[in-house]
Length: 180
Image 1 (cartoon, rainbow, N blue to C red):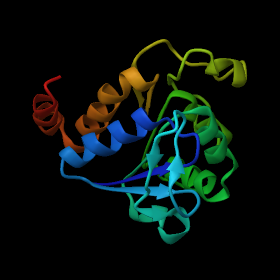
Image 2 (cartoon, rainbow, N blue to C red):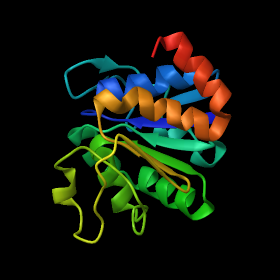
Image 3 (tube, helix red, strand yellow):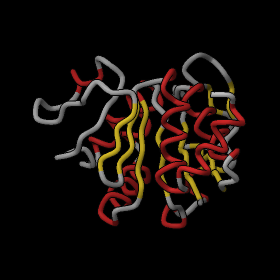
Image 4 (cartoon, helix red, strand yellow):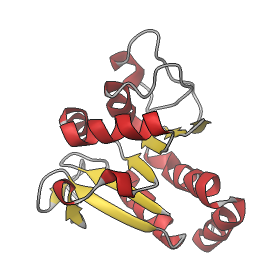
């Protein structure tokens, strides 16, 4: 599997790193794409070094697009034309999409939440339209959409992504190695 994880200044570091690390433990090819070149300063000041700048990848080459939250990073994902176009294309093609925390706002910006069952960080729903509201569950799967609530649910989110795309046996193997 090939996973694409875009990050920007203000991305939630625990969510980003847990997604990336957990999927790599499943032996997936994970590309961390910075929305601008260079080191990213995450929401709590942790410095993250993307594998490549976004403008040097082709999102169509990936099986799944996963968005970590953090309000600063989410705003960047919402404003980035390339990320928004990728979300729209993944959604239209029925390719796997996922978000944690506030990143549901970036999915909504691209129109990917309409009519879907999803979750996000409590309070984020105040920034969503009244007809697009989350459920209060740790991880939610609806078709090709996987969403989760926040840093504390990041392992369950990543393991659910592995289970859905790679199978429950692979997810169980990774879970065991993590002692979860």
